Length: 314
Image (cartoon, rainbow, N blue to C red; front, side, top):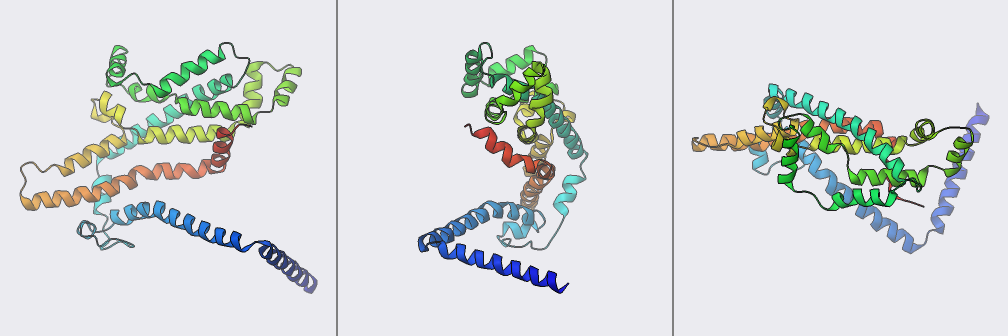
């Protein structure tokens, strides 16, 4: 027991000496740089995190305190009235279910299109590869416009259909090229050649070798498509007429518009509606963000790796 304690203390001393030696090797200029770099990054983190923190404390504070500028670092007169008004509405839960449905279907179909398409475009021997590259790049920079888009959806009989929300979100050209770059930089050609020598065909190579190695980019694409569809409301606002099909974002938008309506009200009623609308804005941000925040930890270990490998090419 005594020997183990002495060995541990000796190792700690050695580590401390190494740290001191390393620190002594750092020049004065480097120390100044590290100090200001740390200070700058800390301030940047505070600038980014404080608005999120403010939304949280404002959503549970008294509306009068928020409007009076009394809420800065901690909640004032804690109240959950805003959450009660939001979560007790049936249309909120209907919007939640609709958005979950739209998001899940969009992610599944998007991955089924983006991953194989990115793999195909990464192959230099793909017939007409340059044509397909230009074919995808042009709509990335030049859109067809809202009216032609609406006419196309109308001719396909997709107005007031849930597929009007899902189909336009299936493929993102940016995500496609990110996936293509990942495959070009991360899949060893020697491994593919070995698979061909062993008799594996193109489909067997893709499903048995490429997909298992593509977990980082698959996780990143799933997160990108999920967040994009979860936050989307414009297509729903244009194409959906049935309120039972509204996604969560559009439901929250309608609630905020209704809470800000002041037609035919007295001065006191108008002020009360304004207080309610102001609080509901913060509550809506919290309610709509929780599912995305819950999703991120499951793909976190792949996220940084997938972004770096998908954005760089040797």
